[in-house]
Length: 256
Ligand SMILES: [Zn+2]
Image 1 (cartoon, rainbow, N blue to C red):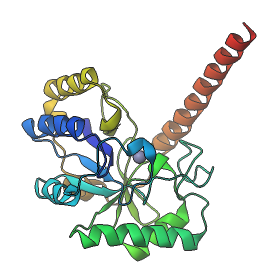
Image 2: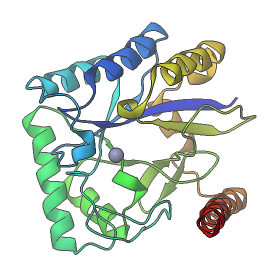
Image 3: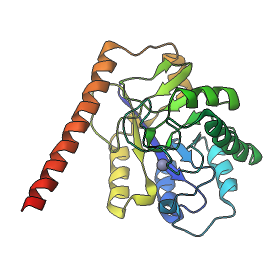
Image 4: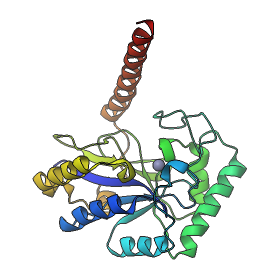
């Protein structure tokens, strides 16, 4: 059966608490355990929405106690390179193509913040999907992280010594098979989208009941298949083509 995991990105002390709480209420109502991508030391102004919540890390502990899966979402969400790394989704990065010394520093500092607050994330979520093999080496050495929430494939797989849970959707879509992670950004969601999310969950509730430890048992030794590779290449080709179409439209508009 097809399964769906919900991932909520960009939790930090200045997130839009009202929107996040609305989504948490929905998830709790249907007993769904999301992945929460937490920026340990946010310096991205786009994420500075509410005033700083001094009890943020106590909330993170509560989420963890509820069975939510805590993920480390980079260090400060500040892009310092134009490289797209292993997953060519975007051309800006906090990690891809960055000197190893700086990557070590960022990951050590981020990990320290989690540790200080009594939390040991098991999952890595790179800001903008961008990281490289050095990032993985550093994560292995400096943290207990062993799961990567990223990649384009039909099912989770093992690669570079990590367990990858692919992340292919940004909204609910009917699928016939596969394990799908839907990445949402609660800070940017409107009322209508939040309602639509509830409706998708309500109509497909069994498909949202996923246990990450069960997935791990089932897929921990799986390698990427030919079909996954075709999907990966097709996904990024389609993305490139749609970008070209957008550029053509802009060009036409400029030309009048
Ligand atoms: Zn982010």
